[in-house]
Image (cartoon, rainbow, N blue to C red; front, side):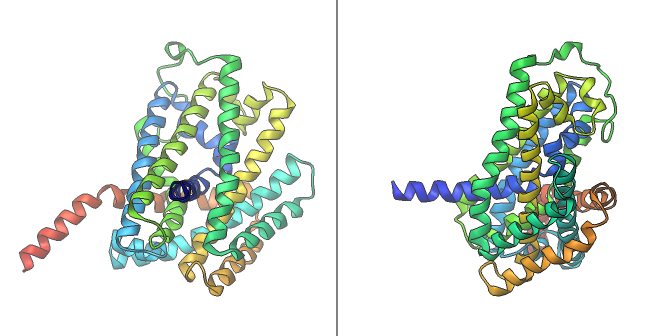
Length: 361
């Protein structure tokens, strides 16, 4: 029974680390889901199903590769996946993006504190800096344990809001939805599904690849696949709830705020907490990814770089949430697309490497 409990705890750590790296402020506000899925009308559900498959498959694949080549950080992972030249370029870009992503989370926390809770803006920034630093000071184990406790709360909130909205308003009448998309990313549900996953893969790869020496192959693959499935399920439920209240939901900057408004003020407060939790867990993932790249997860240098990253991100966070998102997120998308293509083409890459090796011999 102790063995089973230990395996379950480790499985929860892996899957929540993955979920925590993906479900950020954009997801929790509903704006990401609106742009990538809901605005594609009924076909958005097919896009959500595709994203679910890709998240589960890629989560298992990243863990499989990380454990097989025993990675401790994403540099080793990228070098194997993309080769030394492109891997080195992506390494530098990812390091910058993790620091930039952390700045976005600090700015996002400031915005939530000021706009949603009516609290001092700077307090929102410093609370995330302090909490993230405390988690990082606990080393890799501290990061994994924090995710196990925080991520289920935000996932539960997403499920609760979506299912309650569907329970009150009913399922969307798919046959009555417009056949043509109302806008959104890419103009095509299939491309949008792929882009959404690629856009969200940079931070998860940085987090999951740091576990390559810490878990068994079986648990690693299961944890990656389970985390990906739960992310996809959350995407599907929010898409379904949004489609049930179109076109009204599309006119809001925070679509989930409109949906929770239908349920009363209590749910609006729950949404505020959800968005802030999503920001905190993503900030932890960014700081951990940065620190694990610079030093082993249990070392004093890891703690130095992790807390240092929080302080380095402070000046950039002063540029504001919307401005940072506008500048940095397209970069996230481009880098994520390279990663996604590398992962999807990996079976062919390995095959041709073997052929070339045999031919040389």
